[in-house]
Length: 113
Length: 112
Image (cartoon, rainbow over all chains, first blue to last red):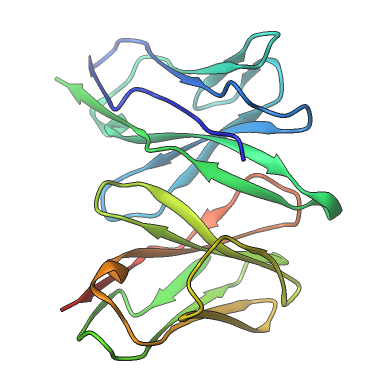
């Protein structure tokens, strides 16, 4: 199974752009990368997914270099409500269309006023 | 309007007891999951069911037995509870092959 490594914690201030990088050196050819957000006492919430290059949605952008051994989640202009734990996942593909989601330990982002 | 619900939200019990956690989703998904999150926030998948059939069983002790009576429900039964079983258990669901999973609010299990 693919293993992910990301910083344990990050601090930022309101209005700044935050970039969280995750390394996944043994990612397989068919594996996708996803990011989830988790607030205290809640279940994780899907943010974004990608396979390569750049993906953008209304919440974040995901940058994946050509070798796909890392990925960077970019949160533009964070606010206090973005304080949460962010998980990088590699989705290990299985036959039949299923996959094994491998969560890392997450990055605890604290946004300061 | 709750998408994925779990009961109970909190569960405090003694070692050796047997307990169950229930999960229901009303999203029409065909795949459901159970995760365990420890005190250090490490989230690990335990089981995955697709259309009531087990597709993932990640080295979980036999004391844990998932049961899926239908596509909308995946219950978790735990026998002979141990101190190390204390954690938050999350249920989730998705369409088969889709990476966006919807998580329930979690069940905090405390074994004393």
